[in-house]
Length: 272
Ligand code: SAM
Image (cartoon, rainbow, N blue to C red; front, side, top):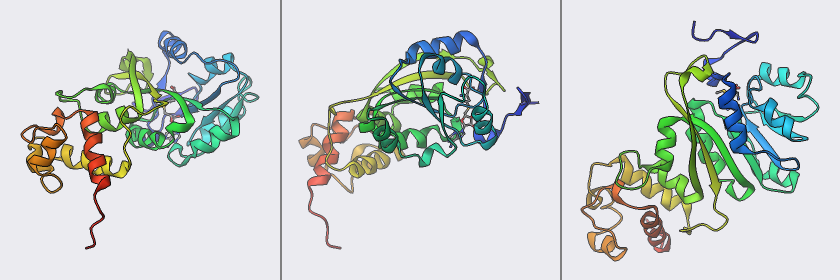
């Protein structure tokens, strides 16, 4: 059975529960995070504590955000962990990470073996708090990590690449096979480090313009920019920003998307 009982807990598919049990992988992830006493450490989805236990050994206290009430209750009565954990039993998508950072008086170090069904929207939620985050380490589907790090002119390069690379420097850390989890997921996984830029390399005046532009372009990624962005820019206007209108969405760099977003932000608001 796929969702077999593990340590007396039945893995819940709807919460994306795949528990890590491979000690060499766990050690490698904790080494990559390198938690230190005094840091504001936050884990998303601690589950049965596979990563929480070794991280908590290295620090005096940490915050964990767990949606599953049963798992949160287990952690609250865990003999070694209970005294060190600040347990937030809540959907991580609704957590105010700026408030968590303000309460600790320093930027957060966030990590988690994320539930794969919500990993992309959760990362977008976290991107809106990058001013309050020092770094993030996440276990994701390998395919998502490939998209996060992809550069222009590749199939994996898309909206997620542009938005993530707008906010963060992104470094793949290690690959993790399905057998490292119980139950084993159907796909390969990988751990990635995201470090928010202290100074954004290509700041945009209005982020909603960048979001709109990348949606428009990548939703029609086989079309040329002349077609996909034709309602917003003429070929001449694209050329003025150094962009060839016969290219496709995947050929445009993050810097160029940001330039276009700033052109849109400067336009007078239409009256109709
Ligand atoms: N960290 C554990 C490990 O590595 O074995 C568990 C990882 S499991 C892939 C994902 C965890 O996230 C589960 O404990 C699940 O209950 C929790 N979770 C799922 N959705 C969540 C949400 N929206 N907010 C917070 N936690 C969530």
